[in-house]
Length: 431
Ligand SMILES: [Zn+2]
Image 1 (cartoon, rainbow, N blue to C red):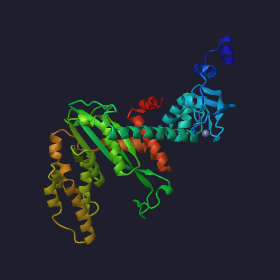
Image 2: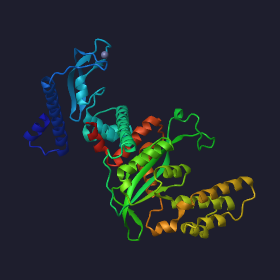
Image 3: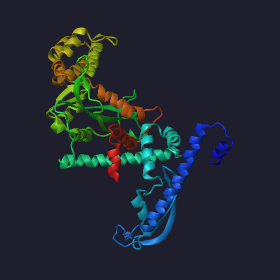
Image 4: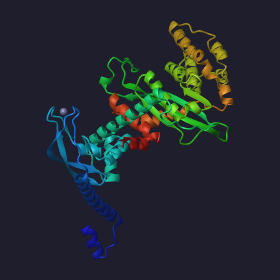
């Protein structure tokens, strides 16, 4: 501040940015002082309570221990009483518990910033961002630890919500749905690079049969009322919410089902499930969304058609136009008959071809594209594919990254929560 006063006295032209910085630093320091006094005042005047151990014994005060908190205003010292159980020697800091500061020196406000920053970008970058935006100097590894802790809390919060939806329906407030809206549920998988120890005994897609990634499953729910100028369905803005994790398809089925219920599945007039046609997709639809119209993504179907052409006519072959027309019209029986007219000579190619034809036969009901188009349904799973890039790819798939499943799941939970605009609800629920 002295430098500011000197500059004013010397009638110098202001360096406005440095003024801002200096005044901000001074306000923070002053604010941290106020915060320290508030805490001391609170401690001095808080009603004395009997502190008990988990074992039931009354705990005894063993004097005060100091720690330095990091708050959004900067470092604030705190001395708080330590209690110990005379029986089992367990210790507690009751003030830490009241302040939501157990086993941490970061205030709730700072932890919220660390979690948010760490969910958006790589931890080293997040540390730079926090220093630049909030004047907070924290180690990238601490951001990683806190972001993952908060992510696990999010996962726990969602888990409890899921349990209530499954076992005590009616307890959780359910979203309302515009009666005109079409209600979409969509899901897909995407690989997350993980540490070697997470891959033991797993077969992968590498040339030698090894794996480098584990599949994260991502699901989304969105609604659609309007059509665009060309008559194609248009997703309602801000209507998309996400859930996801590296987990079995059974657990994931419950996860996406709970999210759909929360969003108003039971009030929706028309429910559409969009998938890429992988086999586990059908199981999830049959188990959790038996009333829904199930649509297999048209573009994945085109890719399978191209594969058939390549099996029959070599690696550069494209699917003939008449096949594409049949697919677009949803004439799957005719398509299979046409494309399977000539079986290749080699047993291997024949096996591959039959597998591809099986994909179409198995999904024929989900490929009634002419009918779906006529009802103005989405027939492409572009929303969830973009979601895989936004939610997972942009944070978890940088080159050189190797996640633990536990760490990846924490960050996925955090990102789903933030991108579904539920983070503030989650944070409020902690209090
Ligand atoms: Zn005890």
